[in-house]
Image 1 (cartoon, rainbow, N blue to C red):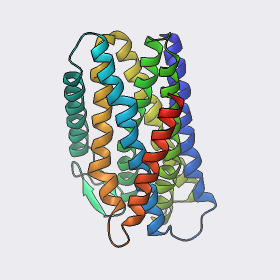
Image 2 (cartoon, rainbow, N blue to C red):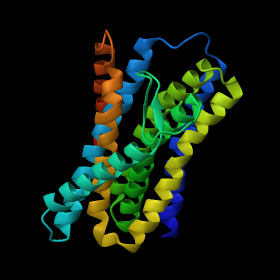
Image 3 (cartoon, rainbow, N blue to C red):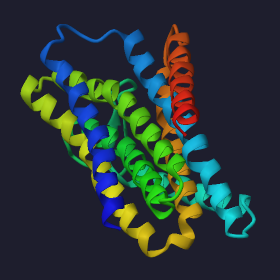
Length: 264
């Protein structure tokens, strides 16, 4: 248990660090970020999350269920549906704002635009932290299988890579909204703090109910794909020249797939 927590802290700590590094772009960026670059960033994040959901979460969920003598697709489908429902509820309740479409969602609250922007990105990071935490928890439960640790490492690297542009995609709009560079950086960095928090939380839960690990893995996959379909891909394809977003999706998917297969 102690070993799995240490691995989760290291894994989610890396993804948090990458968010922080991405947010630091605000100190060296001048002017406004090009729409084409924003589309690539969003698409790249979507591609990574799609590949991670399949190779790092759903396939292991099915394999784990079958190794326990269960019907593989039942916990995979059930957990997936619960993950979608979980994010749907959060998305409906948590006040947030999408910078590219300027539309408020969630319960109406008299909060500043900058606060709503931070909550929007924070919502994205919750399933990413859960996915990383569960991948390392699964590896710790099967310490005799080094491929699971390699797969968890690949997932952390993939999510960390896409967190870099995600951090920039938050800190830069915050700065453009009138926030100081220092405060925009701090908010962008702290938005990634939910990843270690939720990563540790699901690891503690998984340790107590290891028999439900296939459900938890699929749950994280459903939550991640909800974010992809509901927010990232639509925002990456707004307006003209949507092929930038498409290229971002394909690149992110390809890199995450290679990482998972090569390291796993």
